[in-house]
Length: 247
Image (cartoon, rainbow, N blue to C red; front, side, top):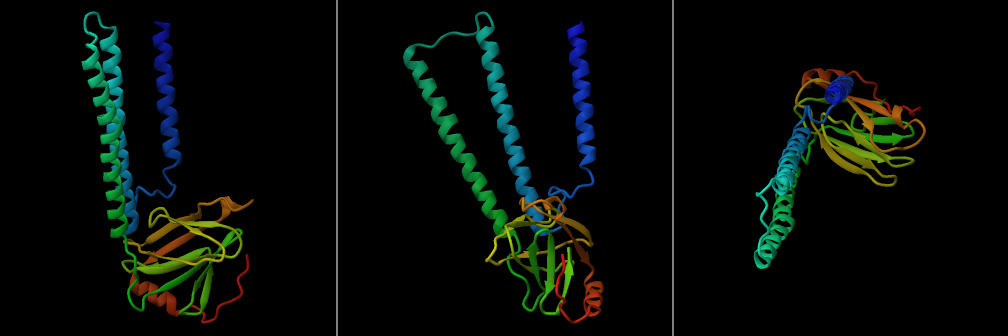
């Protein structure tokens, strides 16, 4: 009885600690709560992988339990003749170790390619271009067509693809806005371009996802998605000169 009570208390403690863990993460930006088309594709792919992994895990546990109970249950386990046993072993090896993993991997590759092809890859002609330059440990944001810059803040209109050009002046950084897109590395000496698009107005937290030095944890930024008319008004009100950025 004492053993059962200890197990019950342990289970309660685990459930309680898990609830605290998930509640503490509730306010963090979540890639599974997408607010853009690219993030939605990534989230859907993540759920597919999670569901498939769950099915595989359940199947393995069921087979394991079935084997354990059959082996120890009186009269249930009957050894097969040598030839039949070899055939059964080969069937499990080929089917479970080669065919099934191959089918799963091919399906995952196809799902990944489909998700990548479904993401917006090109901004509209004459669309907005934003240059994002990583520094230790802040983000320089430039609007080259409008001659002004921001620090740790990106403003975009909703419903319109925006070209983001990434670069770094010192070390490798990683640009990540979980609710809008995946991670993109900023390699010194290279420029990488992708399309960022938000479906809903709001403020979306971003961060550097690659350790880049002492104050890496403070290298955050925010993406503010605005209604197109509101964004145009804001854009026209900015000073028309790029100032020398300061950290």
